Image 1 (cartoon, rainbow, N blue to C red):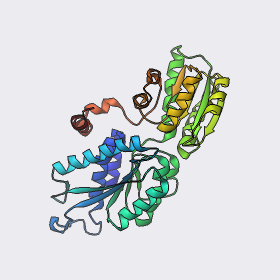
Image 2: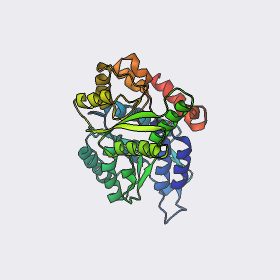
Image 3: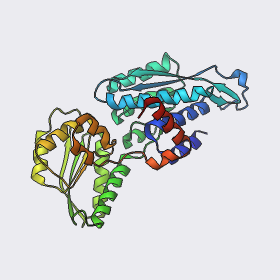
Image 4: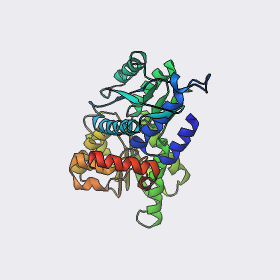
Length: 333
């Protein structure tokens, strides 16, 4: 059943909202012992406890708050139906959610506590590849399914772990998606051929995957693109003057930046102050440009390009439409 759930999830691609609905179905599968598939309803637990940590404070708090909303609404939806239907019985689901403070070490210790003290049957992933990657080792150690919807770095899945289930496309694929859009604009005559590119990437597995996706695309379209600047930066950096100075000197047509929101906001302020005006400016494989615009309060951010794990057309179909409608009703946005 788990494989069926994951296959269905791949067709839906709804980051934070659809994640939990699929995860609850995985939980239903995991609560039935494989050695006794004919288990009677009377032998089933009275509730299913699912654990999660999220960065509700610290550098990732803004997006952690979005995940919290999606998680809570999904549990409300499930329990409004009486819980998960397992072996003919509705079983309520309970969420144990704690703040990992955007700190990998905290995320690890809290995950272990959720498993050993709270006795959760399943873990929902936190947000940010660095936090997720650290946490998955705990799930593997205790053989607890870990459903990841907030980390897309390939390193998460290259350790041979068997208890990690993912719902996001690889970061390289989103970088490729941005480059395919760039290529379409080039073919339409809106960008020069060849175009020059600056790649600014955070020095994390996520940033390296984004860079890899861009370089792979450029490598197969060599006559159309030239990389003028290939520059890493440290996550949670306080200033970007040196990087922006190099960017201004490069005078690239296309600026592809992959950064977490707090870093991108700082970087964007330096970019605007330097009066750089690129033909294309990206927020990488992250979130919608509206999110950054709301924080910055600057109209020019409305033109920042990004690739995300969501297609708005899916919002008109099935379980996705129901969840989106419920979300708008509850949160009025």
